[in-house]
Image (tube, rainbow, N blue to C red; front, side):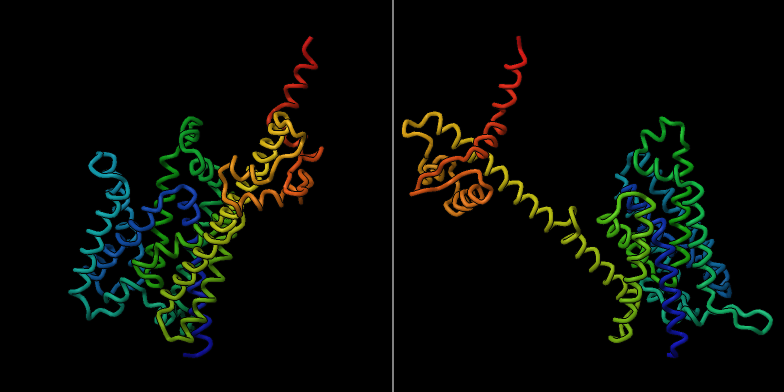
Length: 381
């Protein structure tokens, strides 16, 4: 494989990922991932029907058929759900599975047709996509996939730019959008068409089973770092480019499936982000929960010491051991709370006796609401 072909494969992969990222961001924001899976699997039936009726059709000519089949799958799933025969996800899974099975059965009978085998259906044939080239006037214009995916990416971006307000409003609060006389149904159709067209166009690159990952994985990862639609699209695009370059490098060295490796890298990005993303990651959230529990423990201990000081006949000191018994905390946790109180200057421990400082009493009064009551009593006539 020449270095120029490698660059073409990388360019095609990045274009496919970016084209998938735009509708994927909207779908992730709307919380309706069933559209992606339905589009990817249902489009197989359209490709199979195209090969069955006219095997000589070029790959670009099959995209409208794949798009139409994907839209049919989304429409059928919505009708089944509207009739209350199944839930949304169940209906989408059933329809897409039937259309996928039908497409594979049709393709099985046309295994002699170039590019129409089961491996192409499931995993794509990215390594061979650059060989499907456009030639005009005796000149090689480059891979057809570059033009197809570039056009799809441009179309998706134009849809977002033109209908940005409508897409954002209907995605964030559909009920409010309908009450504002916004044509939500038209926006839903547009998003469905964008997803179907993207899944059908990226089919040769990603395959039916990996198209959903190309569309959703970068967008779901981006949600850990961004909230606004524009920021989500930009973050998702950066994740796509990074995943494509990293995945291609790993696949080239290991001589394994390129699209599958890229999806694995996207999955790794998602897992890492879910675990360690600032604020929303599992580890930071657990750490913050632990800190919150610790801060609450300090306030409870301060309040307890304050009340004991008021009741205690021996003055303003309380045995540290009593705190462990009264709070029903573990010995290690109680010790950490006492150390934290001393470190913050809220309490002092001498000869096993624990006493609040002036700062600690103020914190305890604030926690018990005593300052607020005093302020109200002062203001009252």
